[in-house]
Image: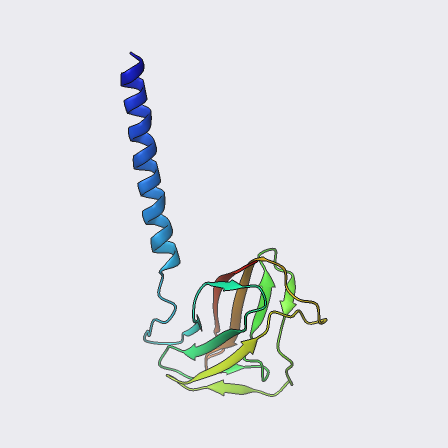
Length: 148
């Protein structure tokens, strides 16, 4: 009796571990840059996991077929904690910026917060928000992890 239940529990554990592993591989390897018909933006980073203090290159790409209009020179870029608390937004001026289809803008983040402190380890959400020529909101975000 003991050996049958042991085999069943070990089998369930192996199957569960395999299923969770496949799910996590699919989540981590999602493509950041997908071109579509209509309005779309993509946020692209070199990788998803960064060491603490490592410079992070963030590209905002117009991955659609219409221009995207932003209300400032930061192209709507915001970096927040998962709780939604703003950690960093590049200095911007209230000047209308436009990103043509296929074009991109690049920002570098040195992991410092707006008030000068360094970011802690954890998960961060990078997002950008703009509008298409018809006034419809276009948003995109991605999540990165900062490790020790």
